[in-house]
Image (cartoon, rainbow, N blue to C red; front, side, top):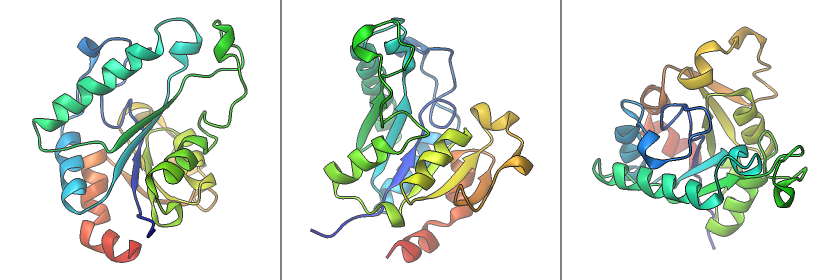
Length: 197
């Protein structure tokens, strides 16, 4: 089977506005331009995958079904813009979890690359030709550890990131963009498709 390059996105601060321990679909607000950017990636043939840490589950603030409900709501909002996420992956674990079953030093919590590796195995993705777009250094670290190129967006936590302190080579950081729409535009879908071919 031929492997496909993909676009991995962090969720909070990249696709939707960051909310402290977002637990309900009613709290979801798309970042302006994000849905259109995902639609343009869809049209260009990129599988778009969300990978997100959700330690609120481990802290007992909400359960995994609440995370799934939020993701279903995001998908419904994106449909209105002719956009879609191929799959959502989330890590509910935390070493200091309040909920015993989630008290784990796992391989899926970013900055570790476990969610990207799982997605690659399940969706037949080529990580070396993929991109990870996030608003935190931990997103970039996960992408780089998986072998993907990375982009930092200045939405969410990215707005306060000191980019001069980032090790661009270690993070495989190719671009710092204002937001997801800017990242997709500056990347140039035609160019990205050619690079990934």
